[in-house]
Length: 123
Image 1: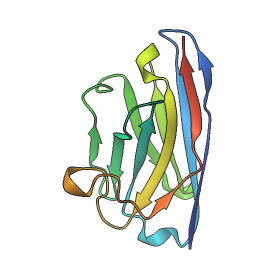
Image 2 (image 1 turned 90 degrees about the vertical axis):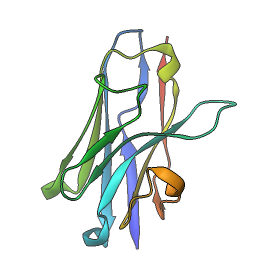
Image 3 (image 1 turned 30 degrees about the vertical axis):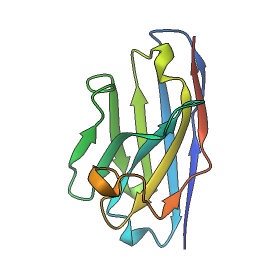
Image 4 (image 1 turned 180 degrees about the vertical axis):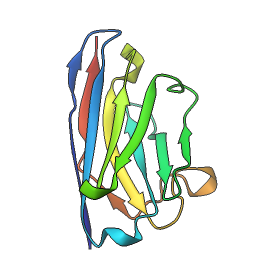
């Protein structure tokens, strides 16, 4: 069993920064893909960024060059550094993980493990 716990959300002004954290516990050895989704009110959930076990990163075009995903394997933690935040980044952000790529293509959003979400508000 795997648990994911996010933290780091909050309210910031346009142009500000936040860093989200996601700590994984349990059987984490099988989590080859970790990353973040977000969902704004009235909108569909969308992938934000993902990181594979071999260090490959993928970003949505809307956050490219503003967000950075990274990991601290010793702490079983994945981070999302968000800079130059815009009001359209306002959403609930969810950490997700799986042994297969659940962030892109037809499998996007099919991750087996999800966190509870952390709210990011940019005004």
